[in-house]
Image 1 (cartoon, rainbow, N blue to C red):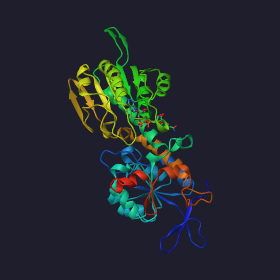
Image 2: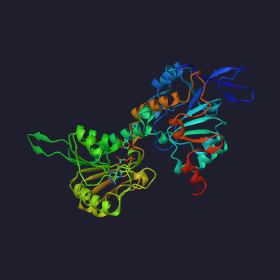
Image 3: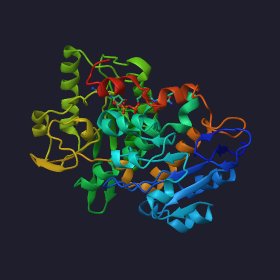
Image 4: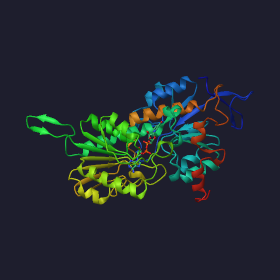
Length: 403
Ligand SMILES: NC(=O)c1ccc[n+]([C@@H]2O[C@H](COP(=O)([O-])OP(=O)(O)OC[C@H]3O[C@@H](n4cnc5c(N)ncnc54)[C@H](O)[C@@H]3O)[C@@H](O)[C@H]2O)c1
């Protein structure tokens, strides 16, 4: 890759490849994440090394990686500059890499033309998005990177869902009063625990693989019939229902009322027999479907555990409370938030690699930042640019629901 350079005139207007202006490296800034509980960081030393070798200047806010176990000295050794305040971090920065969406106060510190890349959670972050629009900041939302083969290396939704699925299985095991594997001991034989996974997308498949490695009997269910093959390939049993609810783009569509009733009966019977239930069922842009009613919880045996990964979007279990652990009928129901942050070292590593791949789309063959975002991945993920909100549904939300 050629050295990414930009040129800046005396008014601070940044252009790519203009003649007669001083060429300077593109500055990438990485702020410390300030969202409570967020331990991840948007880049890691290995990626910094690649970026600096490619000619970028990488600036990292003091202690940005400490909670993910990437201390400042590792970043310095990789070629980054550590800076202690936001003003110094952002002064002249062309690109800002983040994990969590910027707050309105974060946006107020960004100069016109700055490119911010990260998760944007648009529906819950409208004020900051309006401010990015008004300040003519450019924002790319990683949640909108299309799930096409070419974009796999930038698919941060998948890398972080994998981390979440892994932690969910560990959390289930940690809260279960039973061993997960079958054990033949001098003190008798221990039967393996049964783990049921509802929703076999990226997080669900990782939870299945992890629970299998821990030795449990694993069953899984998904409305998409195509998920059955993946579930079986991991050595788990797929619960079959005569419904195929695969909708647009490989995501699930909403079920009809009759389909919901049938699904409910089958799922309830499996839930009642499970020691650990991990739910990951989601429909993009909508409230999570309720798969476990309070009546079903009452049929579970004491000591059973539910880990509800859909807690933040309403929960797959009726009794889930986001961010809390509740006990009902002897059943522990955990509604975790931000599970990837609980394995911050590897979540950050994968996220940083996703961002590195994404950044490659922004650099043209002369090493400048592309003037037009024409690549289909950039088009799909461009949330705000040049004073307009480019993502239609977010624009509608900002207009009070009116298109
Ligand atoms: N690059 C790629 O090609 C790529 C990358 C990642 C994911 N994908 C695909 O995208 C799709 C969505 O993956 P995701 O992990 O983001 O999904 P997601 O987080 O949107 O949903 C999780 C799972 O819940 C399931 N679900 C929804 N409603 C349900 C219900 N009522 N009962 C049971 N299960 C229900 C969904 O089918 C999905 O598998 C999958 O087909 C996945 O294989 C493709």
